Length: 272
Image (cartoon, rainbow, N blue to C red; front, side, top):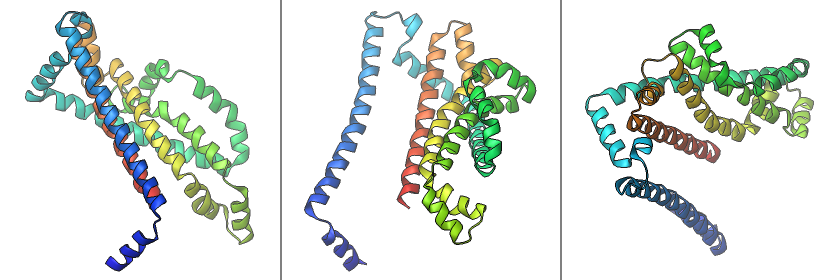
């Protein structure tokens, strides 16, 4: 094993090694800069709030938000609200992504159906899903199912359009080659179409994380009595801006964690 690794290292030229190191340095620089921008923003916000350069009633402050987070963690309410919203988001994410993928496969499989449905898909994509959320919730139910349906409705059309476009743009030569070798439609889908669109599928997954959170928050605004969206709505109605900003901050942190997990998963899948 050691001899093989040495041979691999030996085969890498100095120029290629320097190039790989420059990419790593660039990635480190980007990551550190992102962290510094966030820290600088928090510091400026806290400084402006402490010295009365901004109205803390309207904007709150990082210190006040931190104290509120600690208090909500200690009494267990933050974990309760966060777990409810996270479960709704995960359910809506999987529902929207899987349904969109299956719809894209169906449209690719039946081209005539795709031509028939094309204008309707475009119209559905142009409709404001958040404005339709009350109707969706009435159809699907006033609780968990309605919120999940709202989250799924926001991502399913985008997923369908993105993946279907990727499916029909797969290199025709590969498909023709498989067909000349006797491959059926399922084998073409399994061996060429899906593998060629793995980057598109992973990209859709990352986008759908944010879209699912939007759908969940909108649904919680309308019908929920628990969750991050409920906290934000309750804080705005009672003019507790600390609570509103805490909800937004927690939402941003959780969405970022899910996004970075999806990015990590994308690197693993592409690598192998």
